[in-house]
Image (cartoon, rainbow, N blue to C red; front, side, top):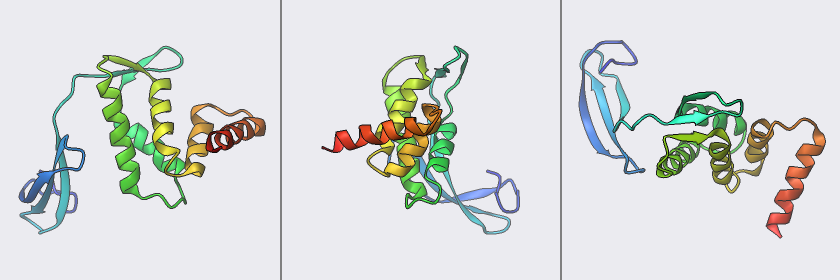
Length: 152
């Protein structure tokens, strides 16, 4: 494996254990050239899953896009990267459990919001504003009012 520090193509596995999700293996590696230690994850390869976007186009499911959206929504919020990664893992698992070859971006967005809402309401509102394409302040207020009603 290529070292992220010196780019040498040689490392040895120091530790290997199942990741928390049970769907991957976490490996600690050490570069044989420079001694730099890094972590890799090994996952089994899934059959391709296509996301049907609002405009009808299709693209391959990309967990990283979910994680990027979560990171942007939680910027400057007290939400750890570990928690955001777990949310992305849960969303991916839910999508794959649907057992479909194609899933709409709306379904994925709802899954993300369901996972994010109990973690941080501000991050949730930020994500919802992009996902639901809020056009004005009234849309924000409607979403906040909806959240308040659910709390009662």
